[in-house]
Image (cartoon, rainbow, N blue to C red):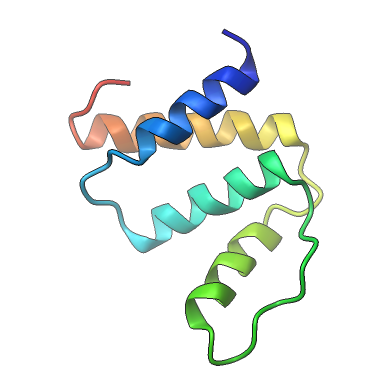
Length: 89
């Protein structure tokens, strides 16, 4: 399989994680968005949207990073979380 296919497969597998910390989920979110969309293309959510701001900040933290690098980092992080949960990679 190619990188794109592996990326999509791990994105699907991550949905089956029974429990992950918010920090881990935000890391995955930021890498996923950068790997799919590229640099942030929306305004930062308002001060009352705490969840939206956290997600936007996680995405912004990867700004300028190559899509392929984000995909590889996403796969690596997903494997770590799946192994920690005792799920097959």
